Length: 233
Ligand SMILES: CC(C)NC(=O)n1c(-c2ccccc2)cc2c1CN(S(=O)(=O)c1cccs1)CC2
Image (cartoon, rainbow, N blue to C red; front, side, top):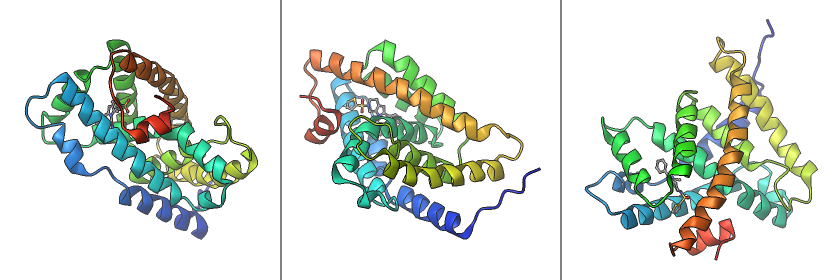
């Protein structure tokens, strides 16, 4: 049985990533708003716009705290953010959704999201993904490291210096693998299952692009930040 040892450097890296992840949480009041009294489809949509916009700001700050990210080529920094924003949003959504809310609140949250103008064909894969993430019972370290790994994906469109991004992503993958072994000793394939979720995430990005088109058909407005990060309007 391989003795898994987390080095001093890996402990330090994990600490930086988890602290950044904790520091940049969506203001709970925004999430709480979704749970207040009756909302119309329009108001639910506006709330999701607000939540997604604040999430993009959160992700940008989190990414800037990843050691080495700010030393990457500036255009590559933008390419990584634009390429991972939707995946990071779905990951974060699953984590918000998995938060134990006062009983029944999850049902209300699900209800509001289902009644926000998103067509059924996207709702199902989205909630299946949330449920598959919740089922993994990820620790905070795993959530934070997986988010950083998603952002540091070298093969995003328009990334020029793949090598430089790989050099940042690899240490994260190494420490995530060890954290998974230490935190889920009874599940040797846990790390592989986590990375499998990243593949599922990519399919959601495809759905998301279609969602945007259908929303724009019936003239839904997004914030300038969402338009910028999603290349719409
Ligand atoms: C926590 C934040 C990041 N989640 C969020 O904003 N959600 C959530 C969600 C999921 C679980 C718990 C709480 C919220 C569901 C959806 C979104 C956003 N998108 S969106 O970005 O495509 C969108 C933007 C504007 C109109 S639609 C649609 C689907």
